[in-house]
Image (cartoon, rainbow over the protein chains, first blue to last red):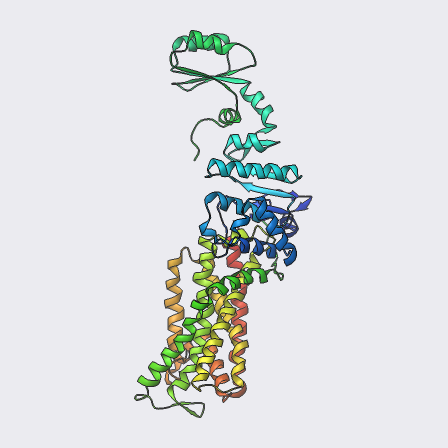
Amino acid sequence: MLYGFSPMTAGSLKVFGLDVATDWRAIRSRIGVCHQENNLDPDLNVRDNLSLFARYHGIPRAVARRRIDEILKFIGMDHRADSSVSELSGGMMRRLVLARALMNEPELVILDEPTTGLDPQSRHLVWERLAELKARGITILLTTHYMDEAAQLCDRLIIIDHGKILAEGIPAELVRKYAGHHIVETGPVSDELRQFVASRNLKHEDLGQRIIIYCDEDDGLYHEISSRFCTGNCILRIATLEDVFLKLTGRALRE
Amino acid sequence: MTRQPISITARFIAVWYRNWIVYLHTWKVSFLPPLLEPILYIVAFGVGFKVLIPNVSYNGMQLSYVAFIAPALVASGIMNGSFFETTYSSFVRMYYQKTFDATMSAPVSVDEITTGEIVWGATRSLLTATIMLAVVSAFGLVRWPYALLIIPLAIIGGLGFGAVGMVFTGIVPNIDMFTLPTFLFITPMFLFSGTFFPLDSLPGWAQRVAMLLPLTHLSIVCREICLGFPAGWSTLWSLLYLVVFAVVFFVIALQVLRRRLIR
């Protein structure tokens, strides 16, 4: 919808102050899009994939050639310029999709789950590059199911479930607001622990086999719980976005 | 939802160009069928049928059987060149390779993609026709310089059949379904559009049906060009038919592909 691909059912939408319904061409030439699936052109090699997009954007050939060299260096693939796409690893394909989205030097980059299915090394490389783009002043809009990715990369975050905005804000603040400072996770759960949690009126979530207790800073709860009630394993950890997400969207499996 | 106006700029050339650079990598294989097909037909019919059919009379001309079928073979080459490009090949790009989805994240419209694909189909027709023309000329079956007109004709015919192919690409649910238009549309036309026998040997009603088919008109114009216009100006009607046919199916293709690609 943002780049004028899917028609809107209602309302209006503006990007850079331009209407997506009428100015989609101007908008698309100022943004870069990374789709979730690798839709690189398998009939073309790495360099041709990029030069074709330069052509779609109407970039002069000499400029395109220079930019392709720069971008391939940026994603660490300058030695693979002549490889065919089918020879690339999953991580390289993702990086090439990102490279393709950067061909027009966009002001806004839209990424749909950019690191899904990647090995940790490739994932960190993508994150590093995105951080660099951010430092250059490029706006990045990304969707992800990985909360660590969101916490790493985002300045501002929106949690959406079934088309409704559930929470919005800076990641660290969202964590503090919805999940507290740290978390005590313990199991199996004894009745005494349940009584203790109820008597202290603690924020918690009872999962049957395990219980998750949301704690504030320096409240000493962990020591109390682990020494008095812990029979199995009792963990103290920092609250994360994942806790916020699960708390807000529930633990039921999504269809 | 508002209807977007038709949006075609010169960027469709970039879509065409993508197919062209891929073709440049595979041309050694792609140019073989149009080279070998007419040779096979000419040898088979020229040698095999010679005994059965000594001469064919066409518009007052007495032609050898191969001289009669050669121009129609070029016509069917024009048809196949673009039709099979915008059906199977375009469908693979659209459905399996997601090429069109990627293209649309750049400032290229659906209409430009459709146009680029159809023009590319016409380019395949042009390449096929040129190669086939060289082969039939080598057998001395066409008249020069009239035969040069085959080139613009290949573009017109190629746009028409390319547009029809693109319409099918926009509506078929999967690639196996292309067997239907091939066997219900392409093969019958190849057999009954005056390719292998003059239309006037058919009963009246069958002649009228044949006159509705685009390949009939493409064959008529091809034959007229190759033989130096024995029928004169009446050929223009067939040419007009081909132009209208191309325009109508081009417009339908634009609509059908919009419905398929915009979700």
